[in-house]
Length: 198
Image 1 (tube, rainbow, N blue to C red):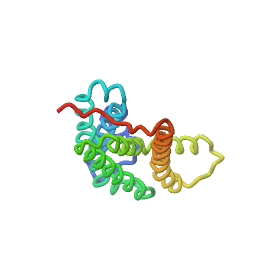
Image 2: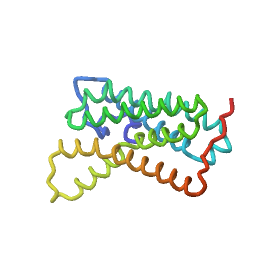
Image 3: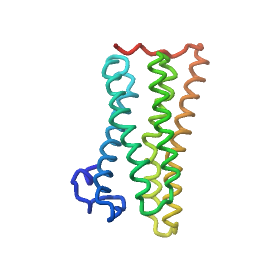
Image 4: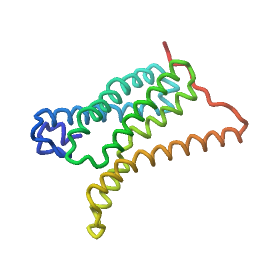
């Protein structure tokens, strides 16, 4: 994020289309909204905050959706993906974006219906997708650190833009299911959450 907040296009870590003067500005907005999403999703999943300050949990949830997920994804899907210097991995990124919005919307709807256990499940999926590019970054660093691994840039980008979010979703699903099994073995108690302060 600091390289983008410098507002210096030469600091961009993504290729810019010189024919689109607004490209860097859109990229900066995407990065800012994405970072808002990452900070607020961590607040959403913090059990102590959720239990002791449900109003803060509810407000941070709205910020996560309205100033994080929706603008970050909207800018990526409708403005940034078409401007990418290579379209390798674009379908993976677009799929992640659509799933991120969908899981977040379902999670929000479940909270509005007071179905808090389901709300938490869907928000864990949303969290997994919010950090969907993390593993892709790790793969990129590993493959570029070892020059003996000769991999096409397009293949690298394609793998990175699918692998990250799919692995995160699998881990999230495994974690949810393993906790549910442990809970049922411990007595079958259903985890419930307090109603947010109105």
